[in-house]
Length: 252
Ligand SMILES: [Mg+2]
Image (tube, rainbow, N blue to C red):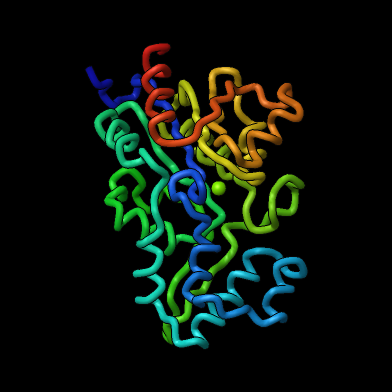
C-alpha cells in the first residue's frame, strides 16, 4: 500500500542528472546537429576553453540565431532527442509511487531544453518546474536563446563556475528538512558524468549513487571507492534502474 504523504511519512529523494541519464543524448551536443555539419567559427570554438561551457553555449545559440534557426526549430529538434531506453517504464513505476518519492533534476543543460523534452515525453508531472535545478534559459524578443548560470560557484573545485551539483543537492535537502521537520530516509542520485561526482561524495551510508556504466562518474568513483559512502549501483538502462528500485523498496 502506498505511504500517505504526511508529516510522519518517510520519503526518499530521487535526484537525477539529465544528459546521458534521463535523455540518451548530451542536449548541448544534440542541438549542434541543427547546423547540419556546418563548422563553428574558430572564435566560438575557443570559448569552450577560454570562457567555460555556459558562455560557449551562449555563443552557439547566437550563432544558431544568426543562421536563421529560431526557437520553434530548436524546440522541434530537441523533442527528437531520445530518452534512455526503459526510462518511460521506470518513471511509470515512480508515478505510481509518488507518495513515497520526491524527484528532482540537477543538470548543467538548461531549463528550456529540459522542459521541451520532459513536456514532449509527458514527464512534467514527475518533474514540475520547481523541481528542476539547471541553468535558466529563455527566448529573447529576437527569438534567440539566452542562458544564464544557475549560480556562481567559487568554492567547489570539483564543479564548474556555473553549477555545483553537490551544493544544489544539499540546499534542496536543507529546505526539505526545514519545511517538513524531517530528513529524507534515503537519497538516490542518478548520474553519469564528472560533474556528478561532487554530489556523490556528499551522500551517506543510507544513500545510493546510480552511476551509469561506461561513463566517467563510475570510473572516478572506482579510482577511490572509500571517498563515496553511499552504495554504488552501476546501471545501463531504465530496466536496471527499475530492478534496483524494486530491490530498494523491499529493503525498506
Ligand atoms: Mg550527464
